[in-house]
Image (cartoon, rainbow, N blue to C red; front, top):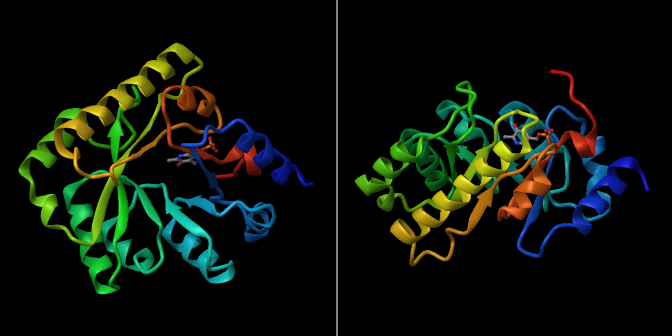
Length: 223
Ligand SMILES: *Cc1c(COP(=O)(O)O)cnc(C)c1O
């Protein structure tokens, strides 16, 4: 086994049944994805539209591509025909555009609402308050080509693992609050996307259903 394959195998061994691995392959070549694919990994995360489109063309069509980065509305059309899930929806405007582009290609695209819990203010995402305000308005209910499948968040970039844990806990609590308040009858509101290379074991303990692990599997990236 290659290093990539061994690392994925190790991660999967410790994942609970309700948690899936998104292998974050951004900035790594298609060949690295093929190594992971060869041992059965099918969900891959990318954060740049152009890079994702190129990889989609090259690689097997049963890969489930997840868009995990900040998505600009004018680029939604390029990925709408094939994207499996969009993790970081941070405005109603973006949700509307995804719905519009999904309708054109007769698809329904699962979307996660990105929630801002980290201390850094450079990160995107809804505050708890803005998210509830958006849901309270109810306009999202008329969007028939998207499904709000849950929420996504990133913890602060810190060595303080107690802080990271408490941020994951607040995401989990907010997920439950939304589930009860807005999605009680929607079995499809079920995903809590949290946890990256540095903190995914804690995210799992706090109820993550989708961990997004990149550098631990594929090595460090050069930005
Ligand atoms: C890059 C990225 C990841 C993966 O980060 P690693 O630290 O390499 O595991 C996860 N989530 C998002 C949103 C990312 O942009």
